[in-house]
Length: 59
Figure (cartoon, one colour):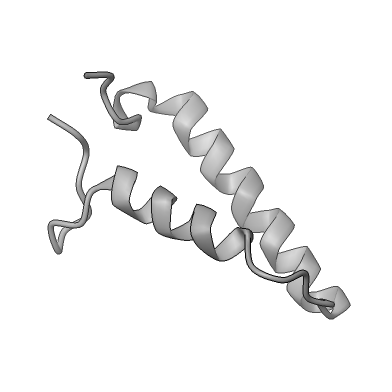
């Protein structure tokens, strides 16, 4: 069973939506926004590294 957020949304769904948003037209981000984006990506990677069971299971 895939890990889910408290509202029932699967991690796989969240990642799919984020991936679609990332493919949109390139945007210019402020320095603050870029720092936040980089921080969130790093924290998510660290979280998955520490808790590999949170990764969606392969079917």
